Image (cartoon, rainbow over all chains, first blue to last red; front, side):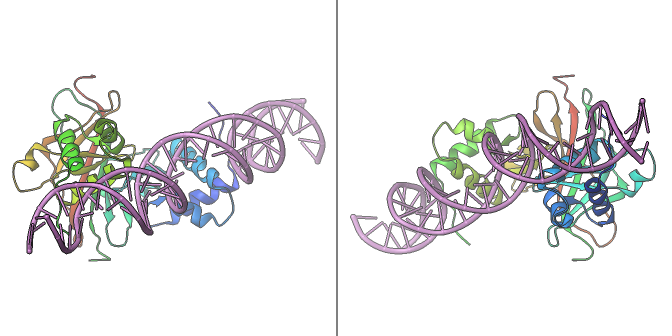
Length: 127
Length: 127
DNA sequence: TTTATTAATGCAACAAAATTGCAATTAAAA
DNA sequence: TTTTAATTGCAATTTTGTTGCATTAATAAA
């Protein structure tokens, strides 16, 4: 167990993610840090922010991992991810639909751990 | 618009996927073609089979894209994917829960194209 | 404030995953 | 059988992600 530190890179990366209206990939984030830190550092900081539950991962429909700070998560200490995500095929925006939770009931014998729910299509801005 | 052809590689790869009880990644498939064709050909054939709607893509929780031919799809000419997928964290099996369809209603303005619904956890065989 | 501890970083090297161009091959129509 | 162009193999390249290690710097303790 290590004691986390607040570094310039970490603060900036969290800022970038929280300021964005969409989920960002590692390369999106790296494009925005503007030379503040190395590519590798972005990977490591993102991992750390996830394990500190400041942000969460969303796997997009193309398999690329994106990161977002949900408003429902960062205010409360509760960290919930059982909401839908929407991936626009036109503008490529990946966003959280935090009000849209999904109730799933599985057959007997399945133990649920995490939900990955993403819908692709055309978002309101592009439609 | 190109006219598709049936090649040995394509037939074999479709066979492999249909014979499997779980969704397979590109490298899973390549491991099974046993030198019949090149690695690159596997990528291209998988893409073609998807666009011909013979198989469908499932993004696993780790971001790795898997391919499966659902029994509900390959018999009918209707190609539906609005069912759940289950990804076992123990045996790594990714399977279709074809009887478990999900009804999602999105806010006005969203046009749904595809659903990517995967739940991770422990499957009955491992639980 | 200064010092000590160790978390975090940069860099280079590596590994894995996926894509592209192009000449050669081959399925299928004519 | 001949012709057409879809498909393939191979090499090269790009993209994505990881690892080791010496250096830097955040934070607690003196």
